Length: 231
Image 1 (cartoon, rainbow, N blue to C red):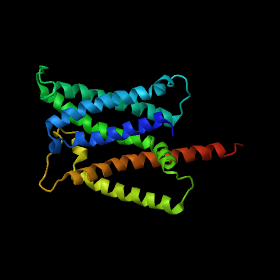
Image 2 (image 1 turned 120 degrees about the horizontal axis):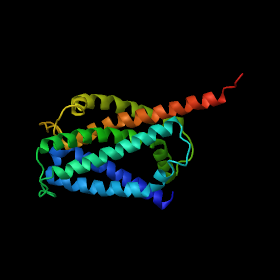
Image 3 (image 1 turned 90 degrees about the horizontal axis):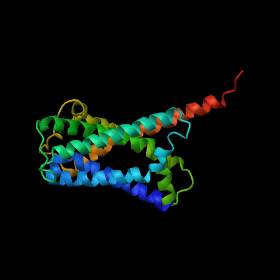
Image 4 (image 1 turned 120 degrees about the vertical axis):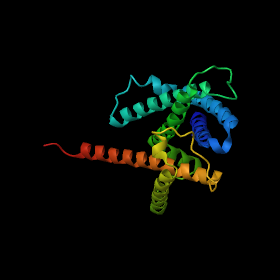
């Protein structure tokens, strides 16, 4: 694995972790939330710079249905991150308190709801690249062969993650948070940092697994169509 690819994977992993920290507003507090947000913004800029060739190749390559979806998703994620960062600066209380903003409740609602949408979009974004991530992990760990037992175990794990993720989605009221203003929820008495991480990891797992297997299904259908003789 090249150094650039390794750096990209590390940055993506750190960004994902920091996104979890950002969602845990009532656990971390406002100052941590804002400092992590600035760090996340810096890593996001680094992510764009490291993947600048992807942007330059958009007009040179032919695009199939999967790639068109991925391009649309990437630009949607880019827009979500931009709105989150700008609205976050406008409602800042610790790092940028001198910026005068009237009716900041509108920007707070925008910031929170876009954050939840950005979380979902990020999970789908990871799902598009999940096959590449798995291949990179295999190369790093020296796994070259295939194993039916390992494959079955990973699929069972994916099913369990999705089932618990659906339960956590209802418990965390993710659907309403995507449509109704809720300032990063509230911290209940039985809520802990570990439970928060497990819940949101499994919620993310729904969209990563769903996207990954949907892409595999589309690819198999395309291979079958190409392999079908024409009369």
